Image (cartoon, rainbow, N blue to C red):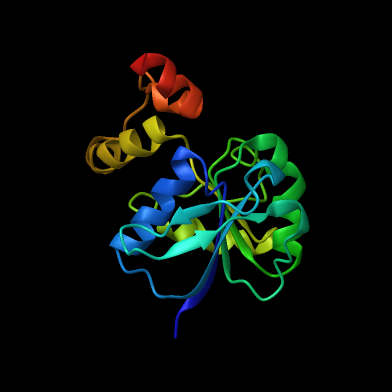
Length: 174
């Protein structure tokens, strides 16, 4: 038995990568939906390298009832509108934006670091994840902390231009 999975932000860089990874890892999916804003309604995105094309649906009109998991890669403003709707419909939201990261009723999960915190999702039906730099860092720091109790970490990051979206990547290329 597979899952019914939604990828919100399927036309963006992160959403497309989510589709690629779901396909590559052969995540057990019975049905998948690609969502984006009305600007992208009707265009097609590929489900990984499977050759299967998904027609993008407008998130404004999507009914999340009956869907199991929604992977959100749409930024905090639209997430604030649509994640609670998806969660209220019974769909577990895994949010990639910064919106819920500090919400005490939403677990901030890095599976390799704090998998037991997942039980906390039931309060709002939403799971948050830290930004990309933090997620990688805490995976490396966890065994060190377990062995020697880290008290402080000073970090400087250099963010990828891909964080600026397609326009930022095009600008760099030009």
